[in-house]
Image 1 (cartoon, rainbow over the protein chains, first blue to last red):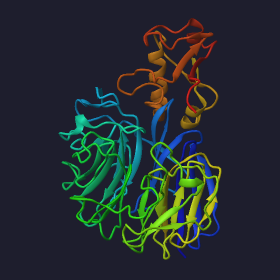
Image 2: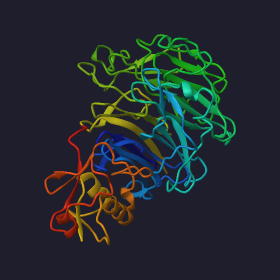
Image 3: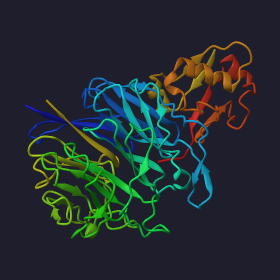
Image 4: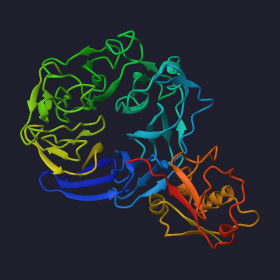
Length: 371
Length: 98
């Protein structure tokens, strides 16, 4: 029988949650790396027991960890993230030039074909790759040195590269997203990049439909259909049917189209999920009701999913990397909150329960479906 | 023998006990002590000082003999009691963060 392993990164450590395919009964291990911020933990699709973790603290900076037994034991690997060449500057919050400075790894994306290769999205925004299991890292600097790079500006959470999507049908194609620069695509395995933000409209920037400057919070696709992208922007839920060449808004009847995560049902590429958040000023659900919204039509028509979720006095947030799906049937949907709960729906969103609650604030949730 | 006390997070990262001990020849400076620690515990590279510039991380402090040595030049000789091993060098996570 299949099983699932949920990898949870929190403000004060990592947790691993295991269940069989019924997803009813859970074993919780952790905290791993107690006291450290764990921005992200993700497993290799080639070898699910190979995990990579980003560990950091404001005192001691960035540490990288690797496991070869599914999170039972860990080994420290390389943490030298040196920008390629002379880093130059980007725009600071006040509009002045600011030197590119490495702060932390936000997101790890293991290769689809090689367990020793993993990509890291970092703050200040750049993409790194390791081909030796995390021992050494090299920047794919064509992204940061794009002609628009000097005009990129951090979002409130820092200028982070938070999303990396590897196209299963084309090993040359990589999508990334940066707050607050926008979405980018490479068609040559990361050597060169171009912005893919046509159709985005952001009233918070001087030119609302500028080539870059958009605060893209998350991009997702279904692996069988990598040309169809879904985006949760600062405000607006967007869709592209041409690999990001153009976007249309699909916020439809959402009660608010601000939010952070977005994900796609593993069994239906037109079924997508978001967690609407009241506003950029008030990072919590509307009316104190934690509601996931599901669209079975690839956007525009949305339904609230509330069964098992708190519907009163709930003022948590769900961060951009804190939602994931398994590949069982029916598809399991998972998300974690800044209030320390991790919720699961084993039936595609119809019903929910808390696997754990009262963890430290959840930064990331990844799910592995194991044979 | 130089005795060094690491902050709790770094003790666990290095799988080290309450004190780390290193032997040095020549003048005992902060720079020399940190290099010796990093050579023995490579997982601590970058966690106390910048890997490339060797600049102290902003929220790390160096104390010894009831003095704050954090702002001394890295090649300043450490107090004699630290060099002799009668007093430990304390590497401390500053009272900041959450």
